[in-house]
Structure formats: structure tokens, C-alpha cells
Image 1 (tube, rainbow, N blue to C red):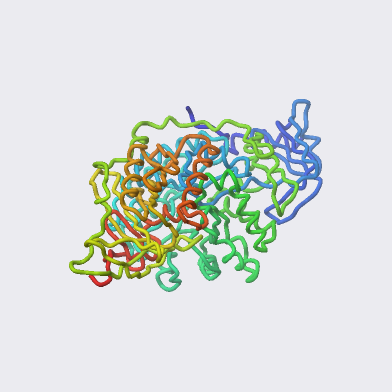
Image 2: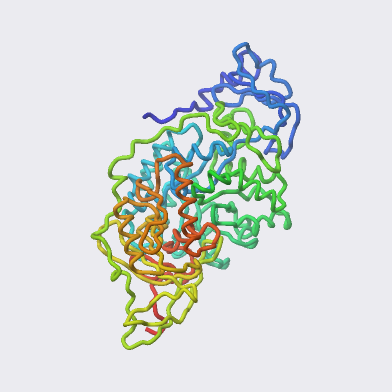
Length: 601
């Protein structure tokens, strides 16, 4: 299927002028609404919007001069006319959905523009995977811009990916029509150290006149932070406290405040605006990672805007941070992000700005959702077998593959343990004393210490790296396995019992990727993700039901963490402190080096 073509402003200019002047009729007029003007932060009652060729021709108190006998009239009936919402940083793969199904899920929530970084699939399939995501995005009835992933692997030398991204790949992608910039520069130590490869990728992006995405996952706001800012990243979504947001805004970066399925970083940072009084133009709202259950049950960018308002933000400021600020950041202020002449006609009709019920969604001049139902087709890409056959394990595993041998003669050990932090991406580096049985170190439910394994699944090496994790609260004989394992996307298995860990891993091998929870030798729930082991091309509602069952199974196994699946999937993310696991070993992310599992070894 050919990509959706949308006329440029230059191609439409004569028609827009004619409609605004009253010489030609509009295709559509939205009549009698309250114009939410994010340029001036005003809500102006009794205004009309005239639309031609998918763009706004006129906004004013009376569009009768633009209305002809064949003009479609949409009665706003005094409702607010809000610009379509923009997500400034997100990963479609985190929704467990392809771009088409993700679009179908978020359109009813008022999202009409997304700036997406497909670095998950890049780690599995390389540039080919990015192209597939780019091409399906181009088919959709809303605006999906693609950022070329920058870091695969995210931390060279500390993990092995299915494919690597090179500066030449970045330079090539910058010529593609839907590429808006460079995805989050996660290798912040490389930037700070002046790594040639990282600088070359950013240089290629800058030469193309496009935006460099940031990812500074460190609390250090000293010289290292300033060196990172000097390297070129134009935004950052890794802030977790007010000082982070202020530091980024002061350095001319956009501080992206995220509310995802598991990241609750808006409340702690938005006080930079609500209490410190900083100019909100330097701030953007985003989701980063939302799984399908959140999208179906709770919302998308509308959820983030509501949350910002609940945190004390003026509704018009919150909407600015989810529309105009985002468009401006990516150089698209004249194209989208506001209700003004020449812009794409992306409009939400809502009866209340604070609670933001999404009653009608218009994208590119077309009604795409009404009262929570998507009313347009979201076409699918023809995903090839190469994208569907990506779980390459050398063999089925046994319980012995998950055994952790104790040092010779030890009765107990002091182990380094990955500590999960609820609702945040960083982990803690914990120490726990564990017992030894028959020369093996066992997990300890009394101390909330489970076992974690990273199973290689790209090159069929047969490798299994074992360690320990705390914070899930698991009990009984259980295991959870996932081929969603940011960012290298091998397979993460967490469990209290080695036989169940082997059964879960082998089930995912047979399934071709996804997530599964096992207890007492039987499967409790699974989410099949056949595309790259990351996504399903089934409807979001189906995947959400499977995801809900998966999270219910986690609770059955004793886990009470909010959105614990997201925590599970990030345990191999070797660019966010403090302690992570990779296919090459246990990683101290405060030092970016491998560390021993046992402190006394």
C-alpha cells in the first residue's frame, strides 16, 4: 500500500487564501466553538474554523462567507476547539502494537501527532526494522514522524544487539520523508567523552537540519551534564526532579516531562512552572512508554494533560506543552500544533478543559473519532517473515541453565541484587546475604529476592546470564519471561523456581516472542508478540485483554507493583543506573563497567 499523501502548504496556499477571502467554499466548517488559542493562551468563545484540503483556512467569529452548499458543517455547540495532541517522545513498540494498531488505539484519545523513536525494533532488525516502522507510520490518517534511532547498542561493549546502527545508517535515514530527527541519544557517557561515532550521528542529523533527541539518565548536573548539552541533544525526558527540569530549560534544552504506564515524572518537575514561574515554552509533555492496557483503559496524551492539570498546571499551559511547544521543538510550528491558518486541521472538540473528555477528533480535516470510537481505517504494512521469526535460541533450556554456582566452600554469599524502584526507570544496587544449598545460591522469598536471567535470542549462542533481583514480591514457584527486554531485546526471565524459568523461556521460543507468566509448571497468561518479539498486529483491545491477564497473573504470583511489567522489561537497560543485566554480564551503570555477582568473590 502506498503511503498517505498529504498536500504541502505551498500546494494548498491558493485554495486557503480563496476560502479565507470568501471566494471559494470550505470543505468543512466547525461552527460556534470556543477557540483554544495556544499561541496567546486564550479561550475565545463564538468562533468558527474553516477547513480546505485538510488545512485550516480561516479562524474567526463568523465563517459564513466560507460556507457553501456542499460544505460540511460540524456544530461545536459551545464546546472547546483544542489543537490535536502531540506526543513529543514515545516508542510505539512499548504499546506492544504495530504503528497501525497504536494509531487506532490513540486516535479516540485525541492524539493526532506522534514523534516516535523505533529503537526497540532497531536493536532486533536494524535499519530494515526502522524502515518497516517508518513505512507503516506513513500509511496512517494521523501524523507519525519517525526519529532515527541513535544507539543500537545503547552502550557499546556492555551488550550485544541483533543489529547495530551506524553513522552511515543515520545519514541514509535522514533522507527519508518521514524522518524528523535523531532518536534519544542514550549513550550519554559516549557524548561526554567525545565518542566519534556518537558525534558523527549528531553531526549528520544537524547537517540535515533536524532535531537531536536527548537521554541524560544521570542525576549529575555538574560538568558531565554541561558536556552532554554541548554535544547537541536538544531535549531530555529522563528528569525525575524539579532541579532536572530547571537545569535542562536553562541550557536551552526542552525538558520533556513524561507520564507513561510506569513513569510518573510530571508531578515532581512541573513545579518549575507552577511554583518557580519558569517560562513554559521550554517544557513538553510526553508519554515515553505506554503499554496497550494503559492506552485502552486510561488514555494517551489526554491522560498526561489531565495529570499535569491535576498537579496544579493551568489547563492552557498544559495544552501548550502538549501541542505548540512540541511542534515548535521539531520545527513544525507552521505545520501543526495550533488552530491557525495554514496548519493541518487537527482539532479536538471537548466540553471541559480540565477533565478533557475527547468527544470528537478531527485529523487533517477528517473526523477520525467520535465519542471514543475510531471511525477511520488504519492500514497495515505487510510485515515479512524476517520480522516474524526473531527468537533465535540454540536449544530448549533446562533448570540447570539457571543454576548459580556459589564460590567454592561457601555456606552463604553476599550478592549484588538489582533493586526495582516503583514508578521509576532507575534501579538500586542492593546487597543481600543469600544461602547456599548443594553448591548453588538460591533466591530468597523472605528477603524478596528472586532470580533473573538474560537469555540470548538473536544469534543462537545458547548464552544465559544469571543474577538476582528484588522488589517484585513474588512467592511460590513461578517465573515470568519476556522478549521485550529494553534495549537489546534478548529474553528476560525472572522467577523463584528454575524449572518454571526454563518452561517459560521455552514457551516463548515456541511462541515466537512475547510475554508469559508461569506458576507451578503451568502457564497462567501469555501475550504473543510475533513481530520482532515486540509487537502484535492484532487490535489494541485484544492485546490489552491479554496484557491485563498477564498483569493479573503477576499479582497472583505476589507482585503488587504498579505496572510491574514495565519494570520487568527494563531490567536489561544498561544506560540507566544503577545495576542492570546484559547478555555479557552484570553491569554497574554508575561506572559503565561489569561487576561481579558476589561481593566477596
